[in-house]
Length: 129
View 1 (cartoon, rainbow, N blue to C red):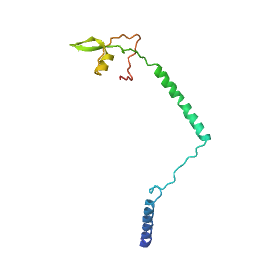
View 2: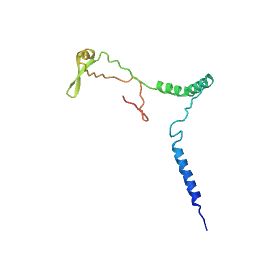
View 3: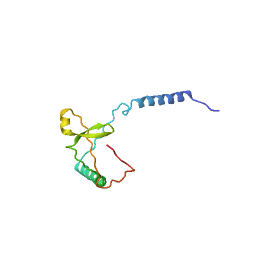
View 4: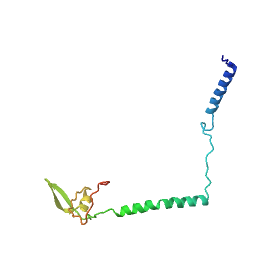
């Protein structure tokens, strides 16, 4: 036959309740924890700086390589003549876009050009501005 001592059970429940109340008043919950302040010396900062710099050298080399692989075709349209719609086509006027922009701020310019080198078709990633 099992005998329970209600006084001991009550006392253990009171201890558990007191512990629960004390946990609510902890330094963590009251945000009274001391702040971590690292000690920065030349002996710790300089090696960290150089290790991070050396780690990013391959990233820079990769970016430089792939940026050099980009092909571009430059067309100067500074002195382009204004084009106006004429039905299904466009007709050039005798006025340059520079003069038109000085007057009213809106100009359409159409230029035909040929590519001088072969541009590969981009299947994986393309950016069209």
